Length: 65
Ligand SMILES: [Zn+2]
Image 1 (cartoon, rainbow, N blue to C red):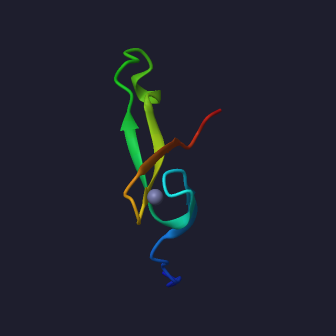
Image 2 (tube, rainbow, N blue to C red; image 1 turned 90 degrees about the horizontal axis):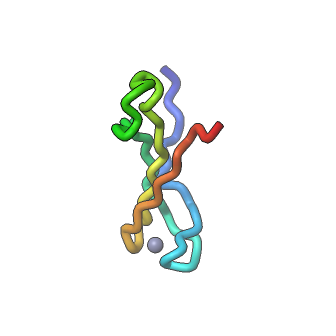
């Protein structure tokens, strides 16, 4: 497995800080329990970025088809 430089974070604009800050980004699979049918399709990957300055969490659904 090739080692690629792992950055400490991703520079993104934070609404709260009003500027570009370093964010810690992770991906989570969240289950949307509201949909009882289509249980197999209710798991959505979310991209979560946390501002390293103020700690604001931004959640973004990744597959908005
Ligand atoms: Zn911030």
